[in-house]
Length: 258
Image (cartoon, rainbow, N blue to C red; front, side, top):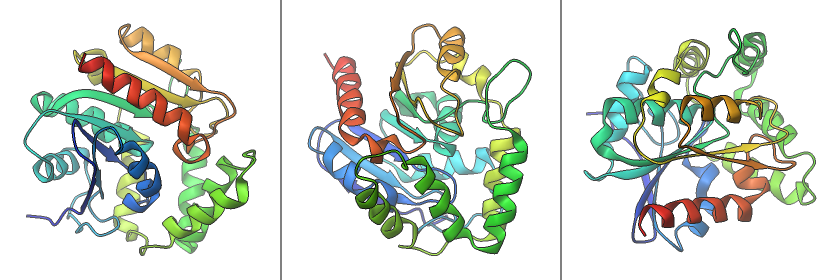
């Protein structure tokens, strides 16, 4: 069995945080500790990221199986950020008994732009991948720093980003390429449309990777889902607009347990 690294904070209703591409649980730490004032927060490293062991095939099916096997055997709220959104949608589809609700944070069930669906231009991902192959951590830091550039506390946020990004070595190229292939190829819109659990989406109005227009499109697929747009937020709203995101999540989780 692959070693999957977890960090757990707080007590109460469980919520599992699944990070984005090329990152690890360190990106969540301060946010998770604040969220843990009201629930039990489980931060999990994707296989081949942070302190989790590598898997031989970085596919959604394998990733979902590894994560589900690593967390408590109960229905949890699963929160996915960016690539993590794709993962938690897949988990909800394959293991519905393990999912009590979903939070899609700066995520898109079809990450790249296709037909009439808003998304990222696949050429941007290819360019990003090319730069990452030269210096993964520096490229990742540059990208994330652009997403918080308009924040009034930019310097403090940038310091936290640096600490998180450089806390662990970057995933190897095979794992990174596998993650990119998931973002380019996977379409979880059918999975989203079939969900019967409560779902909340949190999007940033200035996110350059996940167009804010995707919120309305997702709601058309699943009319019961709630969509929250955070003004002036980019792709890392849990850092740039931490209190707003915490309030949205806390409200959503309380509604599920009234």
